[in-house]
Image 1 (tube, rainbow, N blue to C red):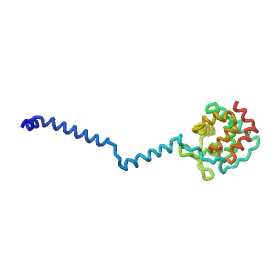
Image 2 (image 1 turned 180 degrees about the horizontal axis):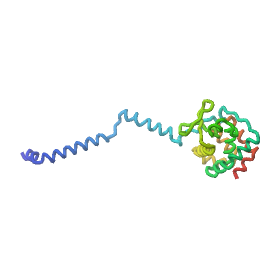
Image 3 (image 1 turned 90 degrees about the vertical axis):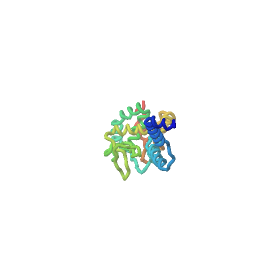
Image 4 (image 1 turned 120 degrees about the horizontal axis):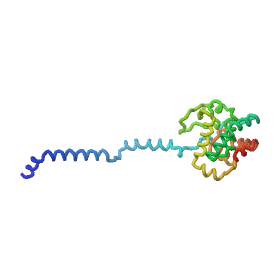
Length: 218
């Protein structure tokens, strides 16, 4: 009898308490993790996408160690000197910022752009034949059925090349091991796939020696 009397007297308070308790239980059920197959299929693609777009896990540019299909023909002296005069100071500035020898930058640009005469250089300001990659979100241009990066200015091309080279996982180790040797630098760039030109390092080294490009490194 006392219990029934208690319920009659306090029915309102008891009702409120039951409503609060029910709401609390429902909230916890929503927050509790589940092991359903739906949850697994929702989280897996997110992890895959993050891995694919993370620059730290992106592979190198993708050209094979001995270059690609492009063949370089040594330019006449006047054309080569015009290129060196045009971009020498730019390369020195990039060396100061990134630690890549100016001689290596100029020689790479000379070979990859055919001394500025390649269609990628004249039509897309791409002086290093930088290809499109999964992480590239800038402008693009097509040459021989392949996708290449397109820049607003030649300077943008030099800067993107410097960023790409210095952004490689083993860049600091490479910079320390090769020191001031253009030959070793060029060989490493070729092995890493930074040119689509056949015999890239050999061709570039010829130009370094012929035009004394190491003088730019001082």
